Amino acid sequence: MSPNNAQPTPATLPSRWPKQMPRIVFEDASLLVLEKPCGMLVHPTHKRETDTLIDFLTQSGRSFVGIIHRLDASASGLLVVALHPHVAQDLKHQFQQHSITKEYVVLVHGVLPRDEGSITLSIQRSMHKARMAAVPAGSGREARSDYLVMGRSTRYTLVKVRTLTGRTHQVRLHFFALGHPVAGDPLYRSKRWNDDAPRLFLHAITLGFQHPVKKEYMEFHSELPEELQQYLEYNKITALTLEPRTEHGEPRL
Image (cartoon, rainbow, N blue to C red; front, side, top):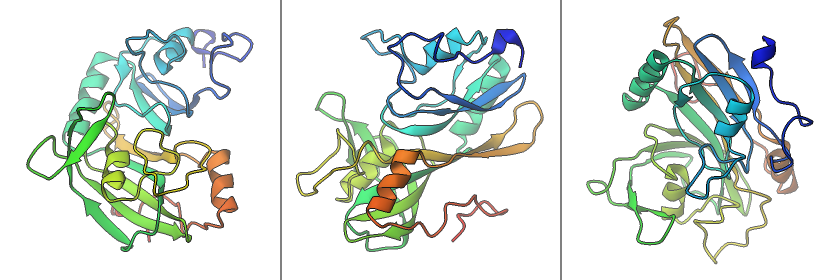
């Protein structure tokens, strides 16, 4: 990595930055893949925050076109950043065609009755500020989340979720609509559940796509953050597997 592309160090970043900073997982002349920590916005809002992922990339000295997809500030995990316009256009097309592999590890309240399933509720803007709403298919914007149960306890179910669409708050809304909100969710929560999770338990664990220039499929995997792993251990939840997908692209059981 050249000096101009060096990652900022804690000593060079202002004190307003979160404790954890993004970690570069992969980088070449076309794109980079990174892990976003919990608590960091991807883009600034109307409040004009200056500690977002965009600021991090700008201060690192990298020339980039944009971050192709989003991840909620309270979530963590993998994102891809395009460094050139033609790369951004290609990746956006892959997202539109639903050919991108996006998988999340999510802990939800209660015990899901099925070991796997698909949630196809559409999503639209809610009348409540900053919230979205899950509605019957046919209204709102189409959304689909496929899930596979990885572990259970008396309080929780651990699932691996693959999203075939990328709607705002999709995973959180889908499980909230089922009556099993995501642990640690400050926005979509129910008084029914006693929630002592340290943060939103939603981590983007897998990201796969065809490299826009090399035309080769690339897949990246991220470890669960320590605080989430510790919460699983505290609740005596052992994941059956968090391994990558099979060569055929199906979740590995």
